[in-house]
Length: 497
Image 1 (tube, helix red, strand yellow):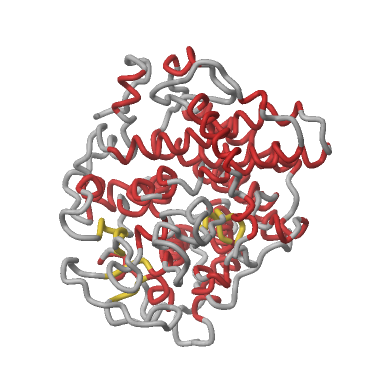
Image 2: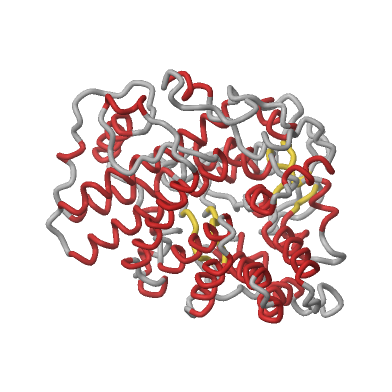
């Protein structure tokens, strides 16, 4: 059981306090309340920890990791199709087919969810420095909140482009006066947050066992690598990826599939993940997430919803014999990872298959009491980013070293599959790294962002026959129409919507 996730479950009193805090402080909430009372909460170190935990807690919400999130990452990409039954959640089919507009509820959901992360982080960052407590712990907690704010903004800016930049708690009168700032300004804030977090966060090995899963120096370096890859600053991306690699804090697990099982949670390959835990009644739910349920096998025994179906294109993309396909896709008639039973046919679902990486074993409570940690950043991802940056920097031989580490782990003891890549031609190696990222990270919510930063979203979608994809429009999601309306047009819409 994940102890850090358990520690995030607040008392009923704190839940009530943070609910009021959330209503009053969340950006563009529908009915901002009047008198601000959160200042009365931050009195001691325990409350500073609780406020920081409340930021992590938001990442387990429906708005941050539920169906809209999966729709805006996997389903919109070539990795996955909507799944479930044909008439279930038609707004997800709009994402799959690019027939959506600004009223699609998925966009309002992820916008609301991640700006709530920002709002909670802003309150903690503003108030924790005023608490009389251990200085090192105080600095670390603020660093954690800056890391989490940066992660939320990194997702939002890739989805929506220019954004409101909110770095302090807002008063009621300020909610609807926000305007979008250029994405370069957002990048600068993400960079500043991560660099400041890096100064005060511990390495993974320096945390006590009960705190395993909190933000670390390695996680901050990993997100900086991601940011610089988005910005095409390959020199800095190389620098921070290599700092993760050379830190000695991480290694590839011997078995690829273990990354997605309970045994792999916060393991040697985990750079950052969101901790989740299913707790028995009467407190089942607060530490869990809907992430596993949404993608779970539909019907007995998993009782999942069956969304986020691995696509035909993904299945066909693997090299012959690649074991990662088996670890990613689970079919009718296959044995579940714990060996408990086989996947039963559900005749209501067309071309039935599921995301095996989201599978979790039996647990207390209902399926929305999902206990599976949500993997955000794995060491394999960092190795492949390092390979990509090094190749772009003209260092093909060093890039091959990290690319082939990932391939070696994937093939295991079978030397007849996944041979080492040997080309040092930059263009050819670039294509091999791109292909490897898809095979290694499929169905882990990275693919859409990779296609965007590679400038390949349009060509890939059109090759799939997504006839409604419009180049120059669909690379960005629309600003939710509700936010345009609430700001009386101050919030400008993205082109084409």
